[in-house]
Image 1 (cartoon, rainbow, N blue to C red):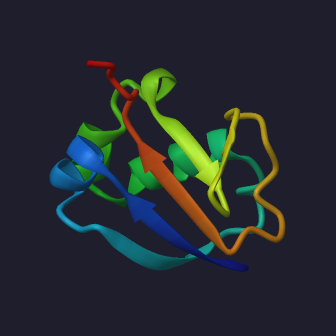
Image 2: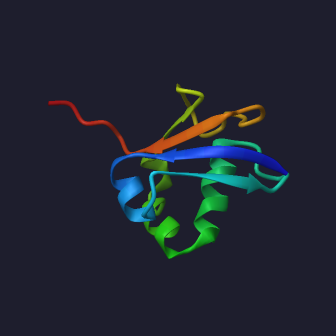
Length: 86
């Protein structure tokens, strides 16, 4: 098991209903893509927030990463929607 602090922003936070949480992840959750798939199994609010996971952006320890990036050693993982300009 790997313990990780997850932080949610914008409408991801609104749909999940919390700004952050600490989770124990199964050993087979090794990438951001795995994490997103795992989170979707935790309930309807996660399914709603991550329904279009291809648009979800991720950062590991405040560094933007692709969905294939390993989460090994991550202290914090942030999930957020695309940023809009303006």
